[in-house]
Structure formats: C-alpha cells, structure tokens
Amino acid sequence: MSGLALKERPQPPVRKGDLAMTYHADPWQEFLASLPSWRPILRLRTAILHRRLASCGVHLVIAQGSILRYPERISIGSTVFINRRTTITARAPINIGSDVLIGPNVVIDSGDHQISDPTECINSQGYRRAPITIGSDVWIGAGAIVLRGVNIGHGAVVAAGAVVTRDVESYTIVGGNPARRMGCRTLTTPSPRLPSPCDVRASRPAP
Image (cartoon, rainbow, N blue to C red):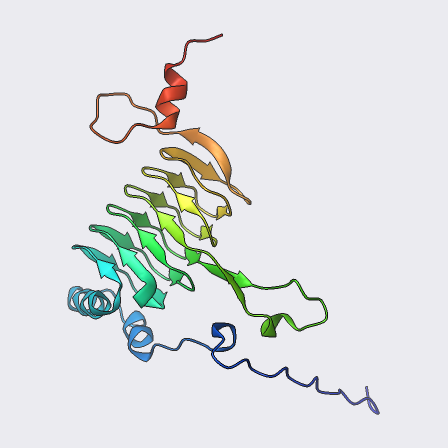
C-alpha cells in the first residue's frame, strides 16, 4: 500500500472533571488483585477495601483478579463472596446486600456511554449513570453482566452469561441476553424468608 498515508484523526478535547475521560487508576487494588488468593492476602485485600467502601459488613471475601472501581460509592452487606476476575464499577452508587454470591468474570457497571449525538465521538460524550441495587441471598452466575439502573430482588438467581438490563423480581431465576425470567425458587418447606411473588402465583387456584 505504498503511496497511501494514513491521516491521524484529531482527538476531541477532554472535558475537565468528566469521569468519562478519566481512567480511575487504583494501584493498590490492582497490585493486590494480581496476587493469589492465599489467606493472608485475602485478609489484606479485604482490610484495605473495608476502609474505602461506603459501607461494608463482616465476612467479605474478594478473590484474585477482582477490582472494585470507585469503592467509595459501593455498599456491601455481610457474608459476601466475590469470585475471580469480577469488575464492579460504581459510576453511580451500587448497593449489594448480605449473603450474596458473585461468580467469576462478572461485570457490574452503573454507567454506560452516551451515544445520542452522532456528530460527536462517543468517547467525548460522557456517561449515563443510574444506581444498581442487589438484594440479599442473591446468586449471580459466572460471566453475567448487570447494567445501570437495575434492581435485583431478594433471593433472585442470575444465570451464567446473562445480561441483566431490567429489574429482577425477588426469588426469580433469569438468564439469557437480554435476561428473561426462566423460573422461580418456590417454597417446599416453611421458611422465615421474605415472601416470593413466585409463591403467590403458585398458590393461586387453577382457572
């Protein structure tokens, strides 16, 4: 391809103070994330995040390779396990309840790119942000993606690889892209847990 010169596209100006154009580097977290999940390292990783999270309960475990960006906007309950290579990015607040299991390679992000102006480069249009709430006793399977503005109800299950773009009712099971209801966790024995909309449906007499 001799004789052809590639013309470099001029870069748009960076908007001062816009989170869209700043990479939130966290050297301590990235260093600790690169270390294996030996018990002393798990304790150190958790201790550092305890001091930086908006709030955090007891018995938090964060496995190797996981990163929590903007931790000052993340609230986590007790007995939460975050598996390997999970990324939680809190461009808007993210609230995670207690007894939550988050599988490996999960992405939870409360912001995405603005794309409304086709005459302007996407990387200069900033972000759309909305909080995410994940209830207690929730299991998010491997490789799932939870996007901005989503509320996941108490006791829900998100299947591996699901892309969650809408709210998930309590005790429902969702999967797919975009995530849709696949089933319910119904009561088989008496339990003190919160009532499930699935239980209400199951208790209705057949027409």
